[in-house]
Amino acid sequence: RRPHSPGRRTGGTLCVGMVGVQAHALPVAARLSYRSLGAEARAARGFGVAFRARRRFAARPLVAAADAEFTDVAVLGGGAAGLTAAYFAAKAGARVTVYERNKETGKKILMSGGARCNVLPVSARVEDFVTESTPRLMKNVLASWNVERCREWLEDELGLELGIEHVSNKYFPLSNSSKEVRDKLLRACEDAGVRVRYGASVEALRRVGGDGENHESGWALRLADAPEERAPVVVLAMGGPEFP
Image (cartoon, rainbow, N blue to C red):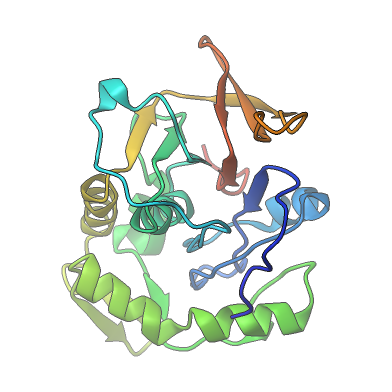
């Protein structure tokens, strides 16, 4: 992993969920430029992305939902990618809000693998993924967040019991229940202090701030039927257009 270079912060951070288009896509960590947003967002689908915050957040005590007005990281989309991003950002000390337009999170998780959820491939190669980034960047991403590390996270931190289906060469939960995968991922997020807002559809993003020493740059979120909200970091994890 190449550490983030120190220096003056020049703008809010926009992170796009970047995953392979195969059904067994491995969760990866990606930091992409704003200019690559369109193509990467179109390519984003599959199981998920593990987000690693570009800035360090000081540890804070958990706050009640009613007091959690300020958000360090706004995650748009409560699927596997969004929840995984939210989990790691919260573990880094950020106050995280997930904006999910549906009434529940992880709808694609529930449908994946014939409702059994093919969680991981047994192995993954750079060639398994589609990206406009360089192969070297993707190789570095996979080196920092490989299948084995992801499996350990799912088993040790989320508490999933996984087994290999040798016909497909993929990991499935021993329960054969995609609901268990969704529920344990969501519970881990909630235990880490992630706030989930259901029925919250973000209609547009707008750059704000950065016009003075006391005005930190970030993003304004325009929600349907709700006042505008702001966050310094936004993660786009809305998934592909095929559902819902």
